[in-house]
Image (cartoon, rainbow, N blue to C red):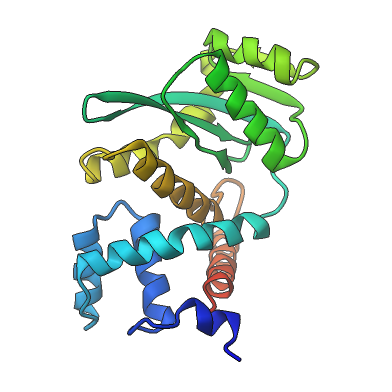
Length: 235
């Protein structure tokens, strides 16, 4: 009987080490598919950019789901923010929730920026986190307050643009990828990519404040070990 690790990569010409490395490159750094193809070619690994795309689409979310189960419990302070995503002539909104350490909690893509969209975000967060926050911090968009009064009426809510820098800064990797990809093509594509992208970046989220260089390197090594376990490759 084939093990789960072997079954996951069954039928692929390349071993798990190469596939997982390509997926890591694509989601971890602001690289296009052809750039990943070239980086692999420099190592003597000849694959097409279309193959990299298929690997990312199949394995990216699988790896992200395993990362979500492995990460420690998130913080009790939620920072919420939203930015516009233009896909052709259609405007969508990327809603983002992060905790006080910068870990991304969720990134739903929605057509609207109203009370119902904010309610969907809060309900999804409560379902995933399985507990309400201690404090919710947002900008002054009225939709947050209206949604909170119905979904989490007893939670402290602070509304001030200056307090929400953590959520706003968390949008920056998405903006870099959006420029690299010359905009997302559809809401579905954006949702698939960002759901995997942000979880993989959560794993490699390394805090540099109040740590020594040795502690930073040790933490990074631990992250790579976890990634190897998630991808079922040797380290």
